[in-house]
Image 1 (tube, rainbow, N blue to C red):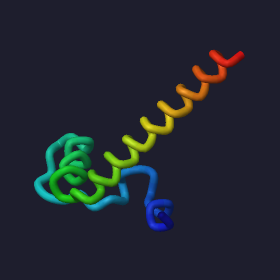
Image 2 (image 1 turned 180 degrees about the horizontal axis):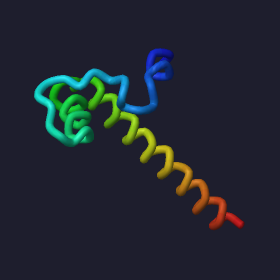
Image 3 (image 1 turned 90 degrees about the vertical axis):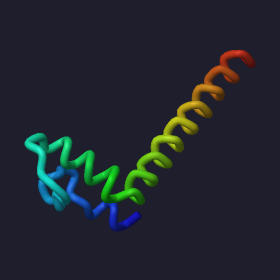
Image 4 (image 1 turned 180 degrees about the vertical axis):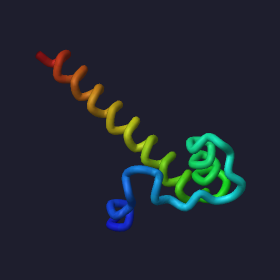
Length: 68
């Protein structure tokens, strides 16, 4: 976890790997998906965790509304 916090929040400092399309976002997307599958997996897990937390919070809100 500590290493992630040290990463720059912008993409300028990241290595742009592979051929360079004109669009910076395309380069970043290619780097995240094709050349760094571990990062992609971690991002998917993070998104799934976020959805689970949101779902639980919604359930708790519904439950408290019903029990009043």
